[in-house]
Image 1 (cartoon, rainbow, N blue to C red):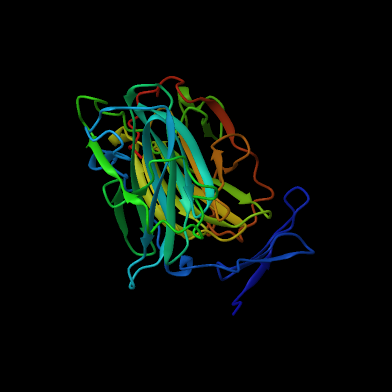
Image 2: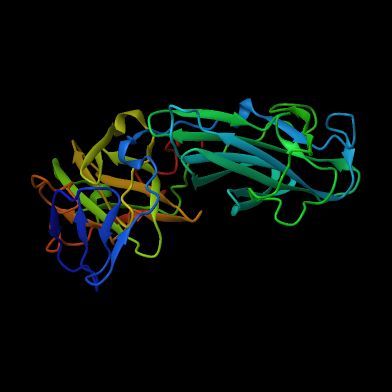
Length: 377
């Protein structure tokens, strides 16, 4: 049932209609968009980001060489794991950290979500899930003859009300052969496949200890404020910032937000308070937002300067239902206000007369530098 609807002013060529359910929105004046598989987003709640902890996982391979961590031939091998959601839970999205010797292609529910390689650095992946059952598949590659081979991954599934960690271990299925056609699809029967063989733990003599990747990078983000010289000093005051993401071509499911402000901030997503942080800690904070609207989502920040320099810095990763992701950073496309109007955080708030934010400088500019602590994925 639609409880309320408010027409927003034009943003470029679009006029968006926001409704009070997370399942339906008007993308343009002519076309209404309905999320046909909303899952359990309605009941999901934002939370502080929880790392996937690759260090609890295990290296796995086929066992063609019975010696764990032993040499293998040049080959590509399939690895699969079906994860069924507990009856009292509802899966929304997942954070995955993966490392490989030598390379990997990662699929979730038949969709390729990432490729990478190397055992020294983990790779972070983000994906939307089906509510009750999900298939994770990896094509692992050993590209050097007579060398160790393995894949290691941790999957953190975000349920509507909690999360759970799954790792690569001997419960995964594999073949001592090249991946069959469509091996990544649910229609492929892996019941006769062998179980994977453990090759080692996170820290071992063969691969050492992979570096954990940051949850998101800040390198592409810009410090913003209401003046472009705020890094050298700004008024003691609070400022309001807004960014609306309008994507009519696909369905938004989750977002991951990495944010930092000098001196304080409160983050809102679609009108709801998500969390607050301060400069005193010297660390950016990440949040998981598992309840995005299907097409139009508003990120708003109330940022306060107590003394001296002032700035807001953030990276947002929006995860879509089709397996894709979109990165949004703080830059001069954000809207900014010298005051913090009542209700400014609401998606229906009219910011059409707000000016664009001023870019103070790129990540790394003085006085902040590149020393901010960033949580691991």
